Amino acid sequence: MACTLCPRGCGADRASRPGFCGLGEDMRIARIAPHLWEEPPISGQNGTGAVFFSGCTLRCVYCQNAEISHHNAGRVFSPAELSDALKRLTDLGVHTISLITATPFIPRILDTLELWRPPLPLVWNTSGYETVETLRMLDGVIDVYLPDLKHFSSRAGRLCAGAPDYFEYASAALREMCRQTGPAVYGEDGIMRRGVLVRHLILPGFTAESMKLLTWIRDTLPAGTPVSLMRQYTPCNDVAVPGLDRKVSEKEYRRVRDHMLALELPGFLQEPDSADVDFIPVFNRESSFV
Image (cartoon, rainbow, N blue to C red; front, side, top):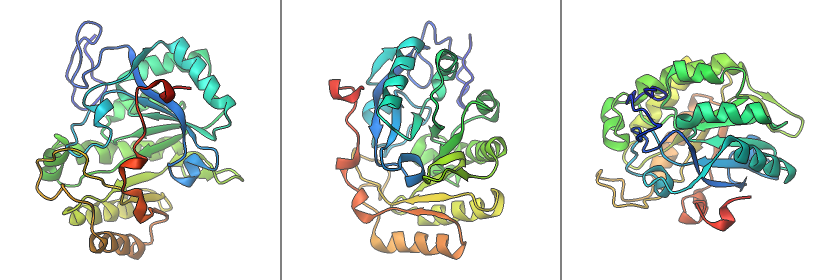
């Protein structure tokens, strides 16, 4: 069957050859474990049960998880095996279950949830580069969407992610996510039960992009949609894009933060010590799987 799950629309028959994402149709996963470092409504005190899927539909030159997104490190899981792993995560007391960069495996994930659905909010942690048609497969399945909103201009999308049409797809995707979930709903413990929480990572030299994206969120998404403004950018690879070989400066961060505050967007600001390789998870080791 020709794959059209992501905006690449590569048309690969992934039963016989990899798609643009580099993956066949079987789920490949690089880490299944509690993760403590997401936003408070996702991780809470005990963490989110994070399932890091291998591969990616983008080609971000600055990716901190390149080991799994570009090189597809990981292990093959059947729906039954993933179902058992989700049960183990739930037994550990996590607050939510996060499915991370899982778009290439939506059919297998739906099969998994037919076997057993965790009694916890299901979080779709995504790059934002999604089609509305594919997201509609998740309507009524996913409780919380945690999308990135990375780039505004086609130039930035092309340079940084190999996707000049990034904003075209991501902007439509975020509107669809908000339509599905409605306004954010929180439990007494502060954990998000339903809703959309938009993430944006500030990149060095791209603060104008950040400000345009924040303005778009204010003008387009439902009032009260929370935003997580991240300053954790850490140059990990030999990045060919000029300026991405350094961390975000304090001046750059303040400029974007002040714009977010002026727009009166609710949400979260990240601590400065988050820009460190120590916060990058360990993938595809024995200790990476519950």
